[in-house]
Length: 116
Length: 115
Image 1 (spheres, rainbow over the protein chains, first blue to last red):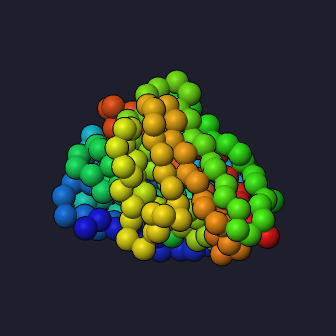
Image 2 (image 1 turned 90 degrees about the vertical axis):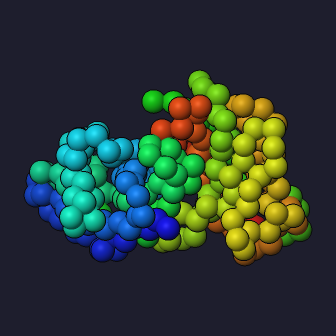
Image 3 (image 1 turned 180 degrees about the horizontal axis):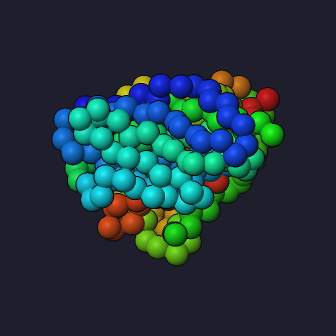
């Protein structure tokens, strides 16, 4: 079975400083992994996805994530936080095979606060 | 990317009434649609998976008679909350995948409040 664990429920950074949101996954086969962002009372927007190609994945708005099989991690990073980055972030693993998205399994989310 | 439109974005209804939420794929054919429920300050919980023209597959613990899902066409799925109660108040989100099935596109969500 697949699962994801987001290690921090809340992260607070200052504007202009780096962002690190941690995610560990568990999967019995090569997983597809995603990061989604959700602004208050909004739907989800895909930031980036890993589907067994390059291990360093670049997404929108300057975010990137690195797939590390040895550590079963898929941490999300951004070099410099912006006020507009304040939102809830979800690490997600696909329950399907390969790149399929038959069932998405969500982590519990990390609320990112950006201080001026 | 592909667009999924969910309607209404916000609805308030009286206890005992039914509410229908629509999820439409605007520029692609959605072979599979998913319905999620999100409790305050919580993650998304998958309620059911629906494939066009067939019955929805419900996750364990989700009452199929309470949450009726219809996926009658390749661009529309509906979720009807029947005989709603205050505990059904939540944020409901749909997502859809196309035939390539490599990415899920999410609707904007529906905030349901049952009073």
